[in-house]
Length: 96
Image 1 (cartoon, one colour):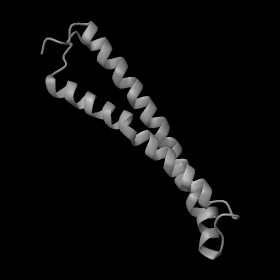
Image 2 (image 1 turned 30 degrees about the vertical axis):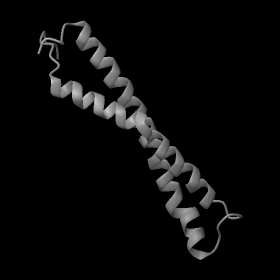
Image 3 (image 1 turned 120 degrees about the vertical axis):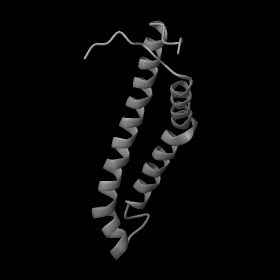
Image 4 (image 1 turned 90 degrees about the horizontal axis):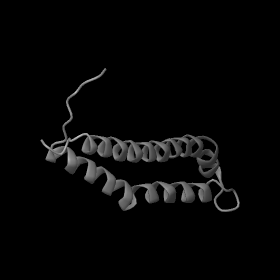
């Protein structure tokens, strides 16, 4: 789909800035911290027993996978927003 329209409204600029601030402001670090702490709890020498074993074998693998996907998605979102914003501004999108 090709179009000649190039537009970035003040609302779009604000939304892009807000998303990037959230990502840069600690969301990615929070996800990393969750993974680190989850890995500690998944270690039998740190935490063990019936429910701890259930966490290690069933709960944590799914959660870790979801957190890994979240980190990848956040990085991709950040990169795409930067790329799109730059291209729109270069094409004259700063004239709403």
